[in-house]
Image (cartoon, rainbow, N blue to C red):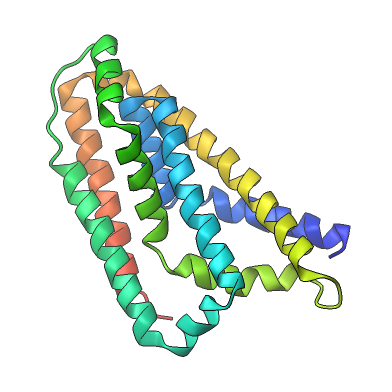
Length: 209
């Protein structure tokens, strides 16, 4: 893999990662509700799932999903169902007026394990990440050179860029938190984010390869 090829990968990954999706929305939502520290836990969950899926893709699962559409469809529909569940959960979340101190208590009560699991499941809910890695990464790998070091470089590069964008969304969510102390605003925020998650679920459920 040449330096120019790596630079092209950086540029394309920067654009792809910047695109709003379920992962970015979740990070921003968690940051707005519970703070940046909780958002970092969410990021860890998302990245664990993404890196695992991309590693699995490198091992050949992407080809399996393309060969057996029924397997891909089952995973896709299961992911859509989880996003719809998350959307309904956001929509129906109870709200109340709270101060900044109360928000801190809510953040601590949220539970790192629960937030990490939510991040992991949202990222893992889209099997297209496997197909994306299977189709995207090979375009930048020189088959005439050792492939593992190249894949490692691409994976590390992807991680740095993706996490950087997570922090952009997390800081945006933190700026929203001051407005979410009002119950009416929090209710609108819950319904907006819930509706967007349900929209993502509908798009995933209706998608076809």
